[in-house]
Length: 62
Image (cartoon, rainbow, N blue to C red; front, side, top):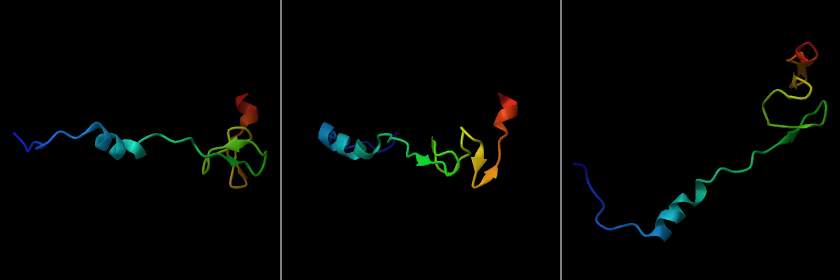
């Protein structure tokens, strides 16, 4: 059997340690082509461009 804690951790100490574990709101940036909100470093789901290049042909998919 491994080592065990000598004393019980209080709820306050446990919760203070977990204060930074919450998932934050995703940061959105504006697409330079169509000005829609999108996740950074990803292909724009609205126009299909990434870094000034047409990556997805959204007209054929529709």
